Image 1 (cartoon, helix red, strand yellow):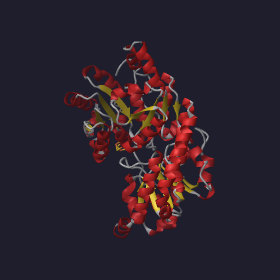
Image 2: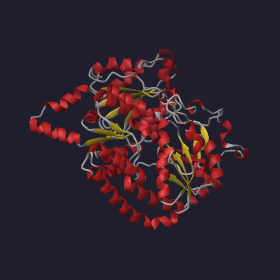
Image 3: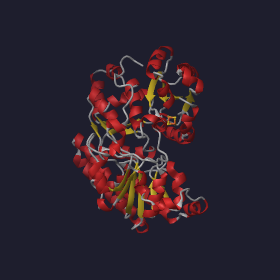
Image 4: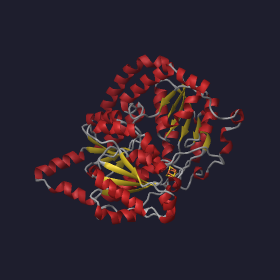
Length: 504
Ligand code: SF4
């Protein structure tokens, strides 16, 4: 931990407090719209459930992001079971890392393996052993300590421990405070990871170093490049094909692009300072980080559209073009891409027309995906959002027939989903694969809202969604068999009850 690193809060606040976000609602889009307010004005923050089946833990999402970092060891500080995600996600993380750097190592993670004795005596000794071992054995650029519930409950001051330990290790030590029990909003993980990056890897000194070496010509070239470069934030919601599509579009506007934080090396966080603009692909992801970068380094940012579906992609590109004063160039590009896409989609439209989709996922992604599906001729049977906060407002405003469009706000809660799907009876469910165990038993084809190996963003994303969707809708025998031989576990009485029965 360098003395030049930023002085910011030790842990990001839960999003319930920071954004007044909520995780419980059931009704139509019109009713939800009227309840969303900027922090403090909305009442959704107070809603909860008298019965909750399951919800995501921010620790696991933090691991999903951290495991993508190149040349980094992740220390899971807690009981060994908290690291389960690192086992399940290993293959995907390794494959995606190697798409960016063929020589990249598999994610390396170790656990401090806290047990009952450590709950009494404290976890400091085991944490120090784990960090020293990681430094000695793997010689990484950075060691990230992700704290789970136990160290927070027993009062381990991980930031202070790492500060002391830093003198004895060559790796940069990073503390990420992402205890699962602190929030019901999994998305708080984005803030927790960014908090660690800001505290420990974003240095004022590095900016000066990168300017120090050149003569005048070097300086001019460096300035030119910086003034035509954008950082695009990827916290794991796009795979390499999506990055390449956005890069293709931005390069066509004669802009350079860096992607971060996922799949970068720790030292690459200096690059955030070598750009004219920071751009988010999803309002749910990056506001905490980008506001801090603007505050400390004066780099402006755009948080607006998500480049999924042609309407939203065009808006995303135009927002960037407006900043660089190149709207004409962007308009010409959008027109050309639109024409090519129209032609490419023609063979798929007949098979998709009139099909009804139920779309579940992040609060922004569901609406832009809904817009993409409507462009392909599908109808939206209903939405399910992981959570709701002020960032949803501009997107829900654009829903057609909001008083007739059903929406459920729930992180997981598969029992509510089962009831809803039975009532809506869609032709396809568009959802994250993590809930596949329950979702596959509805007997309805399931289309992944996101898979790192697939393409969703920009114009090629629209085409690939059409292509894959047609294939999945035409053959759903797998899901029919699942429904027949592995039925859902709920009693018939539950389906008679209202979906919102347990929402307070
Ligand atoms: S909720 Fe706490 S104990 Fe459970 S997996 Fe998440 S961090 Fe670990």
